Length: 116
Image 1 (tube, rainbow, N blue to C red):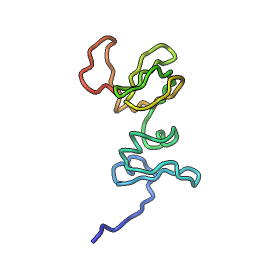
Image 2: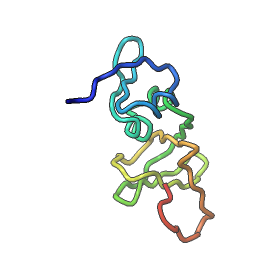
Image 3: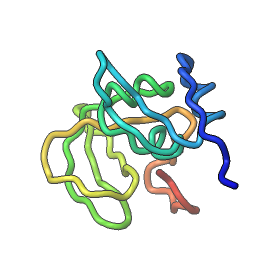
């Protein structure tokens, strides 16, 4: 017998992320994104969804290169950033930084694992 389906309206993102198998984020009656909590938190479709589901910062950058190792970016003050692997065209962009996923390295140090 299949599990019964349930629908809850959760207004607190932390509660929705921890209790739900699937999440639907709406704004002004329109669906902005739906998916698993991991997808919604880790790969939001837009700035609104990113901001709704957790603490985040946005940084304006210029993308220099993107490959399977990461997205090489430079901030407006010249700071180099390697973002998580993905696809991004060279040029201006905005990256999302979650405080719980930020790893800092001293310039010139040898990476010791995932630094994204």
